[in-house]
Length: 386
Image (tube, rainbow, N blue to C red):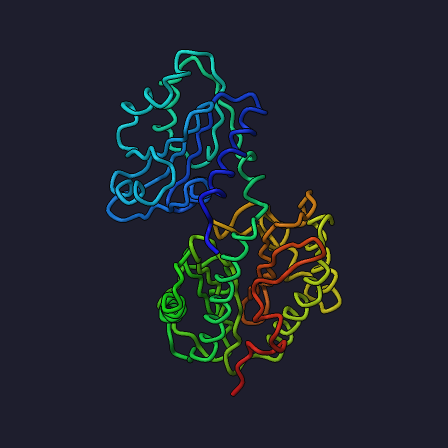
């Protein structure tokens, strides 16, 4: 089940309706090729960074048909693939913007801007110069509120990505060997996913031994050693819809305390995920994890890393990491249709730290796990013993 034309059209019209409700005369929606979700949500096209940097800019003016601007080379393919008829290169904004905004450029208009945290100053200045009488309002929430609730078609694609990730992680677990480098293990995961027809949604995270002390890490030429924690956070995508699943492997020769901590982590996720319900506070996810870990003496390994942004998870969809954020400060209720990565990070353990991550879809009655591997296997399945 792919995303059909009428769904893209409905998304655009829903956003246009919100634009009018907010008293806006136009919307400018900007994404780059690394964080493409906002524009891909409307066009179905994800630019690729080859030869050129290619952002994607969608402009909606009043009741006019939307216009898409992107890298000149990407625009060739996009004209055949995007349902929106007017696709232009973004390399000459001073020429195209006056035409696109012709109906309002001489008026005192109110313009909504989505993506202001990544919108280049030069491009914003070009828009502002074209609309010199206008005021600009930053309004990312207009599209975030739409994107955070997934349609059945979106969840179907995310389920396919999750099934691929489960298989990737399961196969990597059987093939990893002491002496392999982090880069080789990342390549192993990516090759399996490609063979299964997936795209790679974001940088593959593989960290081992002392590198697991970091919350993020680029795979290196470090060779994994006996007794290492080996963290694999992998993100395949199907038709641009992502999965964010992760396991931590304990290689042969691990300390009994490492085994205990890892088993407890699997137990914790299996305990708290069935208790995620619609219309409860998202903060409950943090609270339930903390309450489970406290009696095991793991609170100090959890709270410093789980209280910040995305501390225990985040939304997943067209971007691997998207709103809403899950942490000790989450102040929203969970809603049916949300797709959430539930993440447990523990650090400062003997041997470093670990991450375990599962994506779930919120239903009217609870959640449906999209990643099933961790929940179906034994609690010690990632512990490799001699």
